[in-house]
Amino acid sequence: MPPAPAARGKVLQAFADLLVASGERSATLDAVAERAGVSKGGLLYHFPSKDALVEGVVQHLRDLITADVALMRDAEEGPVAYLLRTSSDVGSAFDRTYLAVTQLAQGPYPWAREALDHAQEAWTQAVTTEVHDAAVARAIVLLSDGIYYRASIGIQAPPLDELLGLVGRFRSPATA
Image (cartoon, rainbow, N blue to C red):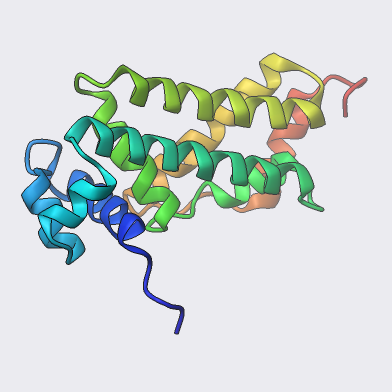
């Protein structure tokens, strides 16, 4: 069994879980500390305000996106297949963090929205390196959004080979 996450990580995970489960209003500092199993003083040591906690979870998402894009670029199958294959991965720490930031973006936290825009742009750029067409890359990222949405409500995506065949139709003969 892996070691328990450090207090900072536990606090970020608890905050994300509360945001996803019951929204931003319920994610008070007291509730986050309780869920993380730390004292309020311990929480305040790492995050002296709710805005600092929001900034922490948004930065955590940015870090996860950077790591994900690196995996996409290095994937033997290529960025497109990687993106489409992993778009149905729900319930992971990445997924919970992404959903938490989505909750925050609906409130008074413009930097949360900026992180979501950054994710879309980073994924689009990675896909563009394979398809060499920004419009096709955006369409592929939107396709992955649809796969993610369907997976999040329990609907299975079509087989990956079928999706990759569809993507092949988007490509011009020069980029196929």
